[in-house]
Image (tube, rainbow, N blue to C red):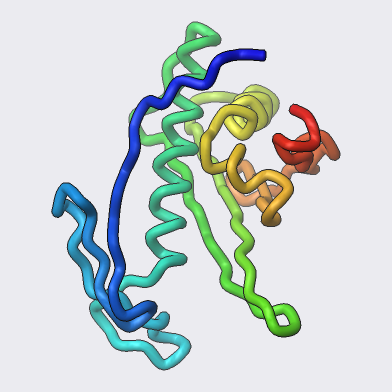
Amino acid sequence: METKKNLYTAEASAVGGRSGHVRSATGIIDLDMSVPEGLGGKKGATNPEELFAAGYASCFQQALLVTAQRAGDTLDKESSVQCSVTLFQEGEGYGLSAILDVDLKKFDEAKTIEMVRQAHKICPYSVGTRGNMEVELRVMGKALPVRAEENIGVAEGK
C-alpha cells in the first residue's frame, strides 16, 4: 500500500448557511451566499453548487493536463471543461449529481475519450465523489458510457 502524503489543506468558514457568507482562510474567497436565484434566492450571490461546479471543472482540467503530459502530449490552450452540478431532493434527503463536458479541441474523439477516462481516474474530485454521487462524463456534449469499475468507491477497491 502506498503512503499517503498530504500536499495541501484549504480552509474556509461559513456563517448563515445558504443565505450567509463564506470566507477562505486566505481571504481570496469572500462571498455572500444565497439560495439559487431560481429557488427564490437573491441576485449577485453564489451558492454551494456553483462553487462545487467551478472547483470540479478546474480540478478535472488539471487532471487532463497531467494525463496529456504523461502521454507526451499537450492540451490546446482553448480546451475546456464545463461542469454542471444539480441539487436534487430524494425523499427527506438532498443530493448532488454532476455532468462534466470536455472539449479538448485538437484530439480526435477516441483519444479524447481515453484521456477523459484517465483524468476521471486521477482527479481528486472524481475520486472523492466516486460511489457517492452520479457523475456523467461527456465529450463535446456526447455522453460516454460509464464502465462499472468507474463507479466503484475507493473503499470498495480501486
